[in-house]
Length: 544
Image (cartoon, rainbow, N blue to C red):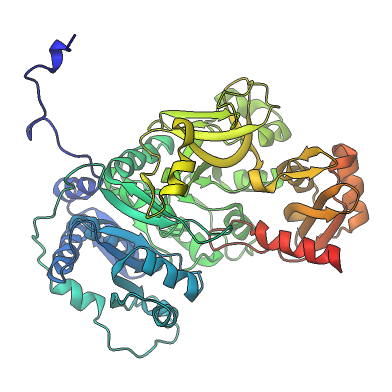
């Protein structure tokens, strides 16, 4: 039988408009035109100016022949131009491709070709890198150079159009294009490509709209919150925070480089209320000299989404006035879609117990419909015992459209009606999930599965350990055993024997690393530890 409530009650322009986060900026400029939207050095830009410049950018792109479904790339630092790209590019119907500025030329060339890029905005600092990439490209996108006055390094001579001149050619009253369908792509972001060519993750207007609001709700961001850009905007489109801030009429405080002095200065001088980053950013802030640190007039929310922060670091952050919340997500989920929602009574627990709870990734964001730990073979939920491992899976409106021009990878990722994260974890009786490893990072020793994260958590509790990564090392008898790469905390000392004894006191003996290697642990530009590099090193050491 037909549903009678569907008869004669159809969608029409009066009752249905495709969701898009671009409308957040339009509303902010209408309601609070004079409120400060962007702070960047001496620049203070209002919401009226932000909206006007974004429309100019869209208009200028249309004049260049850029239309719906075409790709515009951005090789930019955390600057006003990058924020304008997050609005101006989709305002003309195009798709934003934000490029990791730490990549090498060959990978950037691959992305430009694979994404079918028509135009690239590039920061003057990264122009030499782009030139090298373009020499390797089959495509020849148009180049526009953004000469940021806050950049104090050498400038490469060039003949490409200037960003401000390009912007000035556009119409500030341009009637921007809403998506024809909220399923239309808004951005393409590339995975790290550690196991092959990077995959292009396609996200849509609907998901960006929902996650942007989910950020504000999850982070308890009040109207006019002040957000410091320590998270790269190229990373999952800055976790959708470029759009979140317009929804709450907040202020973006841009930061070209993640350094302790400008971070502390911004926290104090601009009244920053929120920032995001990996634990390495916390360590950078806490280890800064006392002369650099500044007293804070308000508590600051810090959101981290990498490995669980060590207990001591969490304690130091709390003492300094920061409330740390653990998030979790992937490029394929628009950034964070899981939050360690804190219960008030947990704050009365001893610090060690609090640290264990904070190490959990948590529960689903409000705009995520499904989050579970499933057996990837049977697709059935694992027991909620905090012990049985399975694969973390997602479903809902903040899961990607799929991988661009890669139907096989898309089909595999969505097998069984869930997005397969590739992360292994457990689910606790209270429904909070906790990661135990990437599927490729599990160490199988003598037939026993060893969670590298479990070993790392034990080592992080040692006072001399600042950073640790545990990977598999080949072993003639056991197949493979754990190998620990360790960075010692400043002023601390430890050797392999003392760390091995520590592990024996806290782990089953078969989980204790057979080798400890001391020195800097390699990380990506977003603070993630490069375990694929460490696995190669461990294999090489075993052969030596």
